[in-house]
Image (cartoon, rainbow, N blue to C red):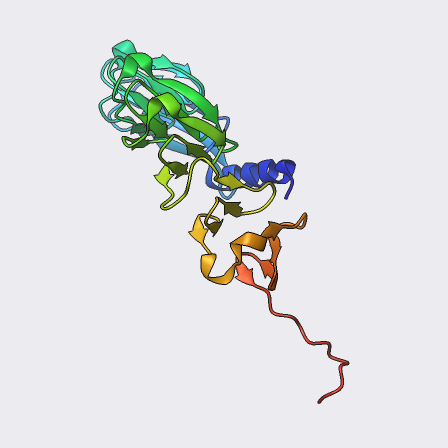
Length: 242
C-alpha cells in the first residue's frame, strides 16, 4: 500500500472519530464556556466545558483553552495542567512547567527541560526523548537507552538493546538486524519473521523468506504467504475430478 493511501486512511479515521484538529472553537456566554466542533457522524456538536470560569477564560489555540484554574484540550479538562505556565507546541502537544501533555493526558515526563520530539506520525503520534527516557504518545519507555535511541519509521524505533513498536518492546527482536518492509506488515531480523508485530516463525522459512511488491504478500521455499498466513491454493472449478 502506498504512503498516500496510508495518509488517506488516516484522514478518514480522523474525521470519523474526531480525534484530529476538527475546526472547533470556544464560545463564552455569561454563565458558561462551550466548545463547538464538527464530527463526520453527527455534524456540529457543542459541549460545555466542565468547571470553566467564563470571566477568566481565554482561547489559546482553537484546540487549547484556559481559565485562571484550568487547562482544556478541546472540551476536555486536562488534569493537573497549570494555566499560568501553559505553552503550546504543535497539535496535539503542549506543556507547562511540570509536564508535557498529549491531548488531555499527562505524559509524566522524567526531565521536562530536555524533552524533545524526534518524529511525528500521520495520526499526530509522536516519538520523543529526554535525558532519561523515550516516549511514544503517552507511553514512557523507561527501558530505552536514550543515547542510542533512534526512530526508524513512524511506528517503530530501536536502541542498542531493543526494538520498540508503537512504544512497546518487541520481544526477541534484534535491533541491529530488524527491518520492517515497505508497503506491508512484515518484519524480519536475523532470526525471526513478524506480521504486524506477531511472530510467524512457525509457518515461515526464515532463510528463504522474501516479500512481494503486492501488499501483504510474501514467499518462501514452501510457497505463498498472505496476510501473515500460509496461502491455500484454490482449486480450479473446471479441473476434472480425480
